[in-house]
Length: 240
Image (cartoon, rainbow, N blue to C red; front, side):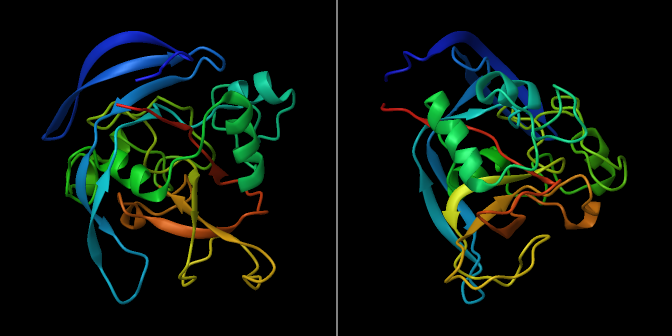
């Protein structure tokens, strides 16, 4: 596989609750972002359609950033910082889908698709959270309404079994996909799909109640929406 834009940093084992995996890790040379090689596989993906609850999905191997894009990483490449409150090691927020796509394009990366995001979040689990189903453990893994009133520092909470941090809470994360069923539109005045495209947002945010967080949490956001609770994380395709 062609990983010429990355430096291999080694192999590492992670555990989240009863789930454990061993993964290969890489450093993206242009941005300094840390990435994990997510192995391919199949899983039962929650479906946005009100007709179908879950369906079997196959995911090819790909690279996923360990953390949401930070304000420091955004500012280094884009030469400005839209985030608030401004701290380099907090997620960049208040960027619309097009701006997130522009960052990825300039970095030689991309946004994950929805199936990749949920598969990476679950990391082999089939429970409500990627560490199990006990809500009392959530504070160890996620920034949410019960433990913060603003953006959390990336990487301060425990990772999932793939070594990915902040997959639940902190910021909603843009995905490439359009949202076809618009029953849940996040923090937005609803506009006709003829005017804007609605994109999938995964993971929840720091203002979400713990009982609403889960691996399949997804909302729709207008692609022009800039919001305090929305950020993104990068991915990269690999040819095996």
